[in-house]
Each structure stands twice: as C-alpha cells, then as structure tokens.
Image (cartoon, rainbow, N blue to C red; front, side, top):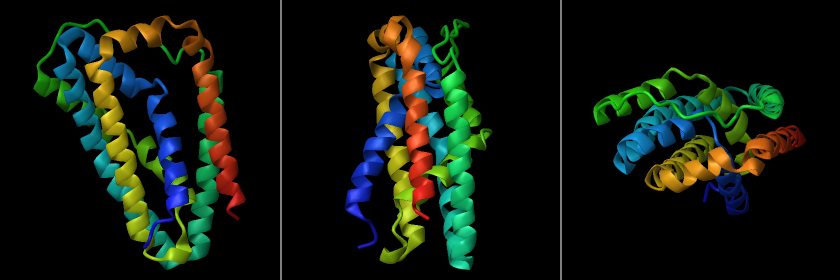
Length: 208
C-alpha cells in the first residue's frame, strides 16, 4: 500500500474545490458549449485534459527524481511550492474580474476547439508549477514508492478535473447563468479560493 487514504480523501476534497472555481479553463468550456452545444464543451474538456496529461507526467516524475536524489532537495522544492501557492492566493484575492464576459466569436469546428484547448494547456507551464506546489503535501514518504504516489495523485487530479469540466460542458446553459450573474460568486468566489490556496501553502510549510 503506497497511498495514505486519509490524505487521499482530503486531496480529492481539495481538488474538487479547486476544479469548480471559475477560471480561464472553465470559461473556455462555457463559451464553446454555449455557442456550439454540449459536445463542444466536452471536446474542450478533453483537449485540456490531454494538455494537462503532459504536465502530470513531467511534474510527478520530476518530483520523484528529486526525492530519490535528495530528501533535502525535495523539501526545498516543497518550500518553493508553498511560496508559489501564496503568490497564487494573492493574485486570486486581488482579481476582481475572475468572472468575465464569455467570448462571442463565431463558431469553429470541434477539431479546432480540441486543438485550441490542448495547445492552451500545453503552453501553460504554470500547470506544472501548480502540481509541484500541490501534490507533495499529500504524499507519505514512509509508505515508499514516491513515484507511484505522485503519479497516482496527478492522474486523480486529471480525471476528477475532466469529469467536472465535462459536466460543466453538458450543463453549460444553467451554469453560465449561475457563474456570470450570481452576485455572490462574482464578488466572493475568488476570495474564497484565495483562502484555500493560503491554507494549502501553510499546510505545505507545516510538513517541515
């Protein structure tokens, strides 16, 4: 057994909250599904998931290599990851426009929607940085096989995110109204998400 299931449940709960916070990915899915239907939303989610797959493997195996080379190096990366999470929290808290108007450009093919979603995520190295900051705090080195633990957590994040994004694509009509017109979400959801990032950062520091 290489997974601490109590940590894993906490990981899934935290991941769920992070995935439902509106951001560029969600807005891209909403925009395409509103314009071109649920299928376009699901295709968008699949494209983003494929892009994230690359960073899941890179970040997870890279962290595992650092752990095998030196526990100290692994800890340093964790500290830097905590600082990065605090930076995300700060920028999220001060962002008053996390919910923006949806793009209204003309419809494009499903193939192009997939390609754009994939390329957007593939060209976003911040995903790898987030994994580096997020995944280590849910590992348990004492259980061994840190590579398996990181990959398992990374793929769990990916799959849960894909499920949530696909559901958003399918239910885009109602969700878009909720996300765009709900005053509470507009005003406070980014503040709530920033608090979550701060808690994650503190928890990461606490490991030491």
